[in-house]
Length: 72
Image 1 (cartoon, rainbow, N blue to C red):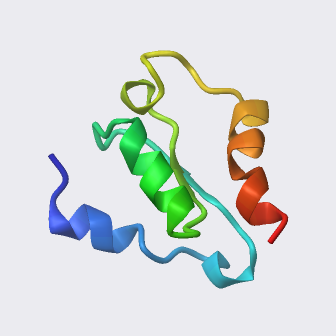
Image 2 (cartoon, rainbow, N blue to C red):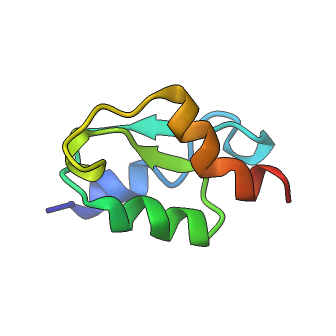
C-alpha cells in the first residue's frame, strides 16, 4: 500500500518538467500504476518486479513503454 508521502515525493523530481524520467521501485504496485502514469502523461515508471509480472525490466522495455509520450 502506498502512503501519501511516497506519492507526493514522486510527483516532482529534478528536471521533471524538462523531459527527464523517474524510474523507481519498491512501492509494491501492479502494472496498472505504470499504465495510469502513461495515460496521464507522467514520465514515471515503477521498475520493481511486482509491477512487471515478477520479471526484471530492461531499459529497452522502458523506452518502448514511453514511446507514445516521447513522440508527442
